[in-house]
Each structure stands twice: as C-alpha cells, then as structure tokens.
Image (cartoon, rainbow, N blue to C red; front, side, top):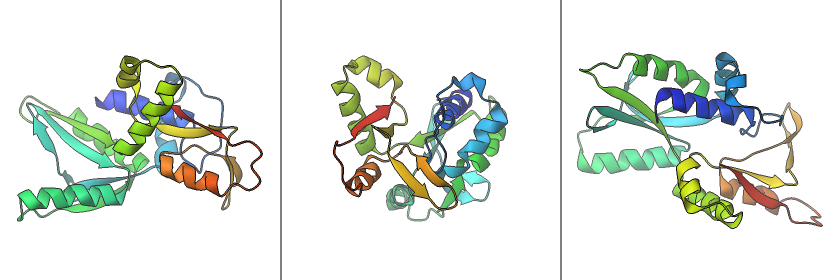
Amino acid sequence: MTLNNLLAGLASLAVLQLPVVLPVVSPQPAYAIPKNSAIAKLEVITVYALQKSEDEFIFSETGNTKLVSLFFTNDRAQAALSSMKKYDPLLTAYVQKYSLDKLIPFIESTSGNASANTGKVVFALVTDPANTQQAYNILSAEGLSDSKIKKNLRVPVFFTEPMVNMNLADQGKKQVFFLDYLTLQAVLAKVPNQSVCPKIKVLN
C-alpha cells in the first residue's frame, strides 16, 4: 500500500469515527475531508513501531521496497521484536509508541525522499489475523464473495446494530466502533437487560 493509499484509507476511517473516543457522524467520502482534519482525527489511534534509534525504523526489504510494520498493540510489536532477536541476537532495537497523527508527517517525509538509491519506503498497518478472520466470517455471512472480501478488506472495524453507547470520561455518551473483535464482545457482555442481542457487523 502506498503512502497516498494509506492516508486515503485512514482518512476514510476517521470520517467513519472508528476510534472509541470520537462521536459518530454520517459517513462521507474520503475526498470530502481536508487532509489536516483527517490527520488530526488519528490522534486517538495508537500504533507501535520497531526502531533502532529515534529516526531509524526496523524494516524488511523486498526488491527496491522497504516495509516498516506498524502494530496496533504493544504485545504484537514486542513479539515481532523477540522473533527478530532470535535470528539476530546482536540486534539493538526497541518498541516505540505513537499516536498515528504524529507519525503521518514522518511517513510523508520518508516516503517523499525515496530515490533510485534508497528505494521506496512503505509503512503498513499490521492487523490481528483473528480480527481479519472474524471480519471475513461476518462479511461472508452477509453474502459478499470471497474475491470481493479479499480485494477490499484491510483494517476491519467492528460495530453493532443497534449501536453500542458508552459513557466516556470527559466526553459523555458516545456511539462507538471497535478495532478489536474481542473488545467489542467484552463490552457487549456487560450490557445490562438486553431484550435483543445486538448484531455484530464490520466495516469493509
């Protein structure tokens, strides 16, 4: 995924108010959102990167492309780092936490400096396979074909019908979306007096 595609995709997610601390608004096309506004909305999304130093990321290399992985949880980032250190015990690296809005400018500057010598740098969001599988199951049950799901499913985002409402500190009652299926299940288990069990759905 190129930087432009990544930013466009994230802008779309921000419009749909995926982070649990943002209010729900009507979905709009990604191009209707000013770039700076889209980036600002990403403040509530946390990602973790593997780094050698403050401005040097760990990457894998394929051909002329350098791939930097961004993880949604510290546990998954630490697991990836541990796996790397098994193959390279002398590797000196650590996990760095970012809010996505702060990382986007660095991604832009790094990708913009790509050349024939340095190659292309791609930052990729690494989703949990369990979330991807749950999203696949939901979309498949709704009648989407395998080919359409595989082509479009990137970062699954879960919600319910009717929508889950939560009282968030300093923000009041909000309708929320979830980046993690198990988190949504845990919230639903605490909903009192459910006359009708909400249906779990996913944004593709």
